[in-house]
Image (cartoon, rainbow, N blue to C red; front, side, top):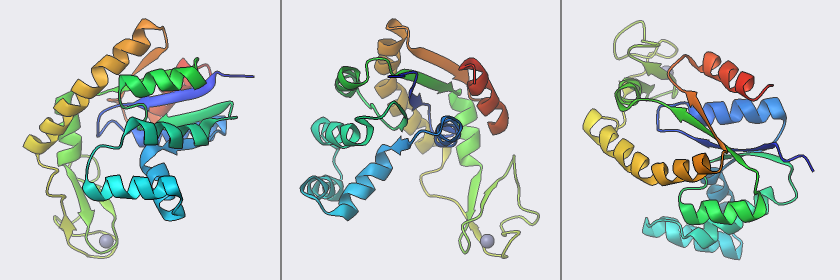
Length: 210
Ligand SMILES: [Zn+2]
């Protein structure tokens, strides 16, 4: 079995983690597995496990490791390659994953908190068609209005700097032990998430010899 196509993506909000995870999955032609997506799938399938997921989501509490591990295992077993996005979230999950995929490698997209805040706080969405703008990187032609449909641009209420910084702090606290875990096992690849998306993709491919 060829295990060198098993990857985990980590990175703060604004790092482009989801986009890069999808790009690598497409390049390697392996599934991109995001935990958000498998929770949604399980809920809509309505299985016994899906009902448990729904109960947890409805309560707004943290998903128990046992449920998350089972759902991820069902997706990755018998697969030589996969890209995990949003998993593992803690050491218990990482240890579980190592029992079923002991050679999985981590790609960590690094971004400073200042850059993450600048990226997230600059985002505006069209309230009508959902088009995404960024005040710095892709501003609309007319302030506050969508280029495509003329709709009003709005910003998510929790995408303000103070709230973003709080989320980033939570992210670092949760992730640091995981990065240490994989670094100590020689399975951590750190990639600078600061350059434009296409350049980061190239850097990842090059680092992996693709
Ligand atoms: Zn629009």
